[in-house]
Amino acid sequence: MSAPVHTLLKSRGKLASSLRAEQVAEITELFDFRRVGYSLDAPFYTDPTIFDIDMKAIFGQHWIFAASIAELPEPGDYVTVDYGPFSLIVLRDDDGGVNVLHNVCRHRGARVLTEPAGTTGNLVCGYHSWTYSPRGDLVHASAPGETKFDKGCFGLKRAHNRVVAGLIFVCIADEPPTDFDETGEIFEPYLAPHDLSKTKIAYQQNIIEDGNWKLVMENNRECYHCDGHPELACSLFPTWGLTEGLIPLHLEEVWDRNKQAQSSLEDRCRRYGLPYEVVEELDTRVAGIRISRDALDGDGESFSPDGHRLSKKLLGDLRDFRLGRCSMHLQPNSWFHFLGDHVITFAVFPVNEHQTLVRTTWLVADDAVEGVDYDLKKLTHTWKQTNLQDKAFVELCQKGAGSPAYEPGPYMKSEYQVEAFINWYVQRVQEHLA
Ligand code: 3BY
Ligand code: FES
Image (cartoon, rainbow, N blue to C red):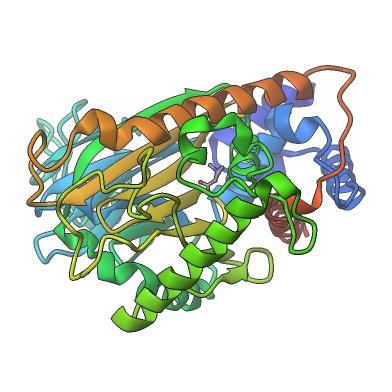
């Protein structure tokens, strides 16, 4: 009998109070007694109530990567970003700043903007034409014979945002976690030299994966499966999981090549004043991060079969294409590769407990000309293929989680970042449930 009440209260945005005490106890127990070092129990990937908790405790509380400024280059440009029950408008204002507004009309709740991206002045709801300024203030709401009401009370709800090195993060909590600014200070010096303000979108891909968002993130956080990425493996050095002193004979040459490439990359970084050291605080801070600059194989410039540049225009003030990949992982929904010639951003937006949108965006220098400076097919090939392969892996795991035969299995050493993601997630939800 509790289901209808649960649904009703949820629709009023009161999820926590809508759960029965037994449900809360059951779910708290699932979190408290999960086996550390093992994959999660099936309900974490399949249960709609746990998905609701994820939306409230993670996506409703933490800093979420939404887009980059290359997606909104001019005043009035916007993107809409949807995850779980939320829909947000991320909009460039006249001063060049960013506003984030809930895409829910304050009249009767219609979605105000219905396109994934566009350019707008005032925001006009398509239902009864309530009109909002780009800051979200209600500026026009006329109805025949209507007595005056206080428009000041009916602006679009606002959310917090931070723009760091051209990446836009949003947080819909009343009080966002405070350590994000420190995390931003860690990654800003790595990414700023690539100058996203002087880039443009070469291509954006949206794929829906039939898998829970946590499986998408887990899959990203390990290279144990990287033999399944032949195109990507050309760029990486295929020595994943190996440790010094335990290198099989046939991989000794690759190991040495990697070490040499990394050492000359670090020399170059020192010469250009670019940071390259690994910073890894994936579950030791609320805004969890890993960032590093790693050599690429072959020419060491880009994600191509021979490592050669895929766009002829260098980004920002960079002076060299041979900068490997500056790769960043952020909890809970993003990862990035910053190269000399292009940048790829990845954003994970949960749809429901068994579906997730993965948005991949390829950015090149804003003066790079398609067909002249870069070939779009070649630019996107490696990660388009890798994304499809990852989608298949995620979907296989989602199928497994749905089977009564599924039980959590142990993470290997090379999956320590998966474990860090799960530890981070479990801690955050436990804090929220407490
Ligand atoms: O993008 C990443 O960081 C990793 C590398 C390989 C698997 N995964 C897609
Ligand atoms: Fe938006 Fe009526 S619901 S104007």
